Image (tube, rainbow, N blue to C red; front, side):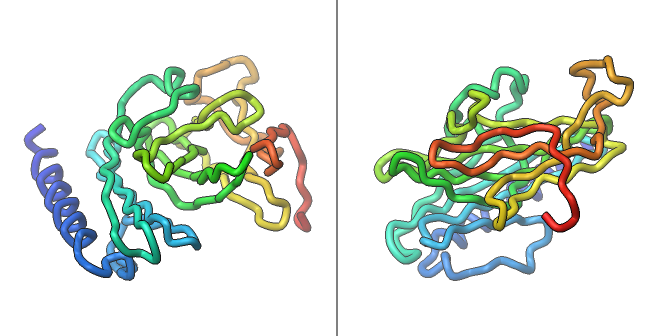
Length: 232
């Protein structure tokens, strides 16, 4: 633990400095692009910015940190919400809505707004290095009410989950991205390489087909084992 503590102190200092900066006037205009390993997502309507970053450990695991800067109008009158990672079994999180202080920690790299029944949801694509054996890709949902704190997870997937967690062997890489033309989230279909080791994610790998979540008026509709050609 003595080897980790200096890193934790360093990360705490970074979060303090970032928080102080975000609490200054016109902080929403800062782009922070020169800060390594800091992911910043923002919406066109300038309602909020989502900051996430990570701390790698020597044992192959990671710790994740985040902030939501929510602004009332044109990047003004902002308030901060600190994201606190919640280490709980994945199966317990798939169907839960999570407050910002019990967040499923990961590094977000894309945000896709989707409006359902006049409610705006922000679908988030993320990466979790997890450990030396497996890696995870995350599809989560952020909701911000006008007078309520932000929360993660929403039942807008037709498989009745509040978030999607894709775990696979760290020996392989998979793609998870949003295709604007097709209006769908596309990701590699994974399965155990021996065909039988269900839920042993150390053995999960892509099989050259894809799964997609298609954007609809009712939410995201799952379609599996699709073969896409290079023109799609």
